[in-house]
Amino acid sequence: MRRLVLFDIDGTLLTADGAGRRAFHDALLEVYGTTGPIEGYSFAGRTDPQIARELLSRGGLDAERIVAGMEGLWRAYLRNLEDEIARVDVHPLPGVHTLLERVETAGEAVVLGLLTGNVAEGARLKLDRAGIGFGRFRVGAFGSDHADRPELPAVAVARAEALTGHVFRRKEIVVIGDTPFDIACGAHLGVRTVAVATGGHPAGELAACAPDYLFANLGDTERVWEAISGG
Image (tube, rainbow, N blue to C red):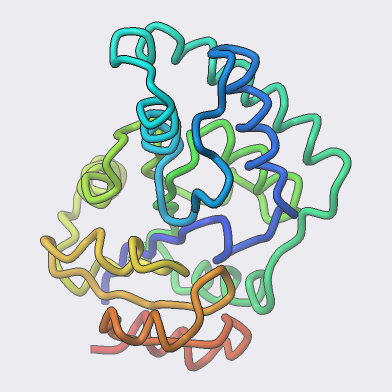
């Protein structure tokens, strides 16, 4: 058995009490002087660059102005995020620690990874603050790699191949997440999808997206492991 197991972060592995959204809001104001129409806009399942570009373009900024401010935006966002997560309760969601430990006991043939819209440094800050640990994930694909989430599974697969020498294909690739975007993002690769209703999308909405497996949370370690490792 070989598996590349790719976890989303927010709403799947942890909750950060809105720290990312607040950090993003303040960084947009600082760099661009506007947040765009952020009220009512859902960050869930989107990459950080996608969020920025959508909000700013809807706020009337042209593409040239948006691109010119991007480096400054990420510096401001990461600075703000570090401040925000120091003040709030960032914690793992039910079953996360035990499940990650179960995946890690499977040996070298199973690669633990991340597939997230967070920029890489934002992912590190959140995971370390939650006590999960960024460094335990052997590969990752991040919003800082590509603004379009459907492009991220291929990035993770390429990095896993460079690490192991094995090209992970189809159901060897497992994407675990809490949004319809997570379920859909690897469809073109034929991946195995595990949906978990611990984010902002209820189980019925996730079920309508036809994931391979659906759980209320990650607390039933052996059932989730069977979904990951089964044929």
